[in-house]
Each structure stands twice: as structure tokens, then as C-alpha cells.
Image (cartoon, rainbow, N blue to C red; front, top):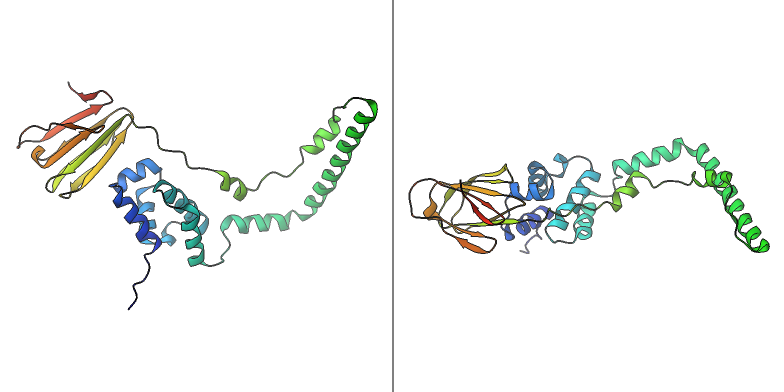
Length: 245
């Protein structure tokens, strides 16, 4: 019996896990709420909202994970069907409601084009180019602006802030760990044995672990000693190394 192809959410989750990223760290780096990331990975798109919002989050998440955003969004649209988005429906209603003014805009644009063409001809015949009149400039300002949906297509998700501090935590056994990045706690839970988590910040990464003998640390690619077994391990790291005092 043939196996069903992996869903959108399954591929998103596998891509995140392959990069050793937790939901909390991914939310911090993508600026997408953790509950929305979980909904995307579970395929619970109705929990996110309208299809326009789902497409936007899928595009951002896929780009962050190194996947093809257009392919992921296209797969979702094929799954969802040809249901118009909220912005498309709003744009259609607006075009219908403003049909008479739109005709006036068309007339103004034609007049504006005629004035500009006339000014150009006059400049050629007179040996110099004349500036468009104030009336022509005013009519030019009536040119249509891009719709909200068109503008949203050109938006790009800001790349993550360049990291100065990068701390890799490898669990040698199941261990409870809490991590704060630049003064904000982003993880508090158990890291399973054999798992590596990477946390990056601009100024500081702080860690506390229940048993230092069960973790191995690397700061910006260099190993860090955690001491012997027993007792709670706490440390803070900055761009120049471990912060003491």
C-alpha cells in the first residue's frame, strides 16, 4: 500500500528539528508566536485565521527554514481551494463601490497624459524642455496607488538580528535546562539525551542546568568547561566569553 506524502506541517516540523531548533527559539528568531508555529506544523490552519494570514505565516516560516516559500504556499492554496482571501474580497467590494470615482480618475489620467505630451512637444519645438504645469503635477498625483494586497506581496520578513553570542548545548542525558537570551527567558524544560540546542543572542546568553555533568557546551564554536558533577550549574556568556561576577 503506497505511503501518503508528508503534509505541509510535517515537512515544516522536520526542517525545524533538523536544525536543532526549539519552538521557543524559532518564535524568537522569526517573530511568529509559538502557538501559531505549532498550528502550522500540525496543519491546524483554521486556528491561525483567514487564508491571507495563513499564507503570510507559511511564506515567512518556509523562508526561515530554507524551504521554497512559493512551493509551500502553492501547496496550501491547492489544498484550500479557490476561496478568495479577505483582502481580495475587500478589494473587490471597494472596486465595485467606487466605480464612478474610478471613471473620473481615468479621465484625469488621460488629461494628465495629454498635458505632459503637449509639454514635451512644446519643449522640442522651442529648443528646450518645459516643466509640466502645476495642474499637470496635481493630476499626476491622482495616479492609483497599489492596493493593500499588492503592497503586502512586496514585504519581506526582516532577517534575524546578527548574533554575537552563540551557545550550543548538547545533552548527554535527559537534563532540565533554562536559557535566557539578552535578558529574556526563551526556554525552560528538559533537553532529551543526545539532543543539541543552539541559542544565539546579540549581547548575552545565560544558562542554568540541574546537573553540569550531563551537558556539553560550545561558545561560538569553542568548548566550555562546566566543571564536575553535582550542584546547579549557572553561567552567563557574552561576546568575549563567560561573564563573571
